[in-house]
Length: 206
Image (cartoon, rainbow, N blue to C red; front, side):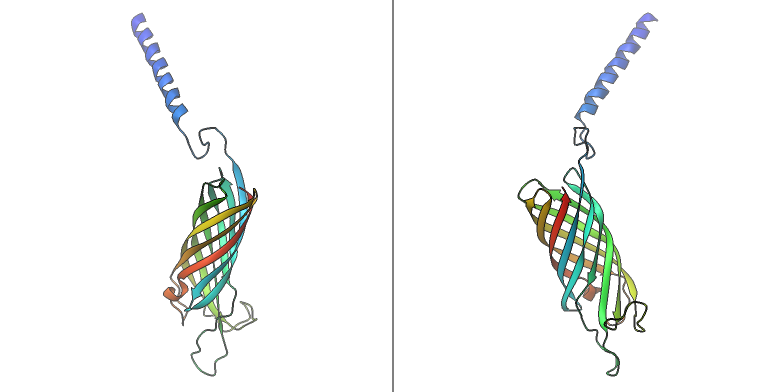
C-alpha cells in the first residue's frame, strides 16, 4: 500500500514537472513569451486615388485602432468619394446628378519589422457602404433623386512605410476594392470596384 502511494506521488511530481517545462516553452501573441503585452494605437488619415465609373475618383478618410506588441492592429476605417463625378442622364431634361459613395468596416493590420526605418504592413477593410446619385450641394434628406443602394465591400491593402519619429510615420501603398450587392441604376459592382493608390500619415504609439 505504501509502495502504491509512493508511486502515485512520484508520478504526480513527474507530471507537474513535465507540465511546467511545457508551459515555459509556449510563446503567445498576448505575452510574446515574456508575460507582457505592449498596447499602443494610432490613427491614419488617408487619401486614395482610385477608379470610379471609369473615371478618376478621390476618396478621403482613414483608419484607427489598437496596436498590440508593435505588430497587430485591430480597428476600423471609413472612406468617402469627395470629387464630383457626373452620373449619366436618362433624359436630356433631367437635372445634373453626381455620384456619392462611402464605405466603412473592420480593419486588421499586421506590420512587419515595425522598428526598422523602412518596413511594410498588410491590412484589409471588410464591411459595407452605399452609393447614390444626388444633386450637388444637396444633403441626403433634401434630394429627390437618391436612388440609393447598399453594398458589401472588401479591400485588401499593402503599405510601404517610413518612420519619421517614434510616434509618426508616412505610408504609400495600394489596394483593391471589391464591391458586391449594389443596385443603383447607372452603375455596376464592377464600376464601383477597382484599384487604388494611397498616401497615409500615421500618428500614435507604435
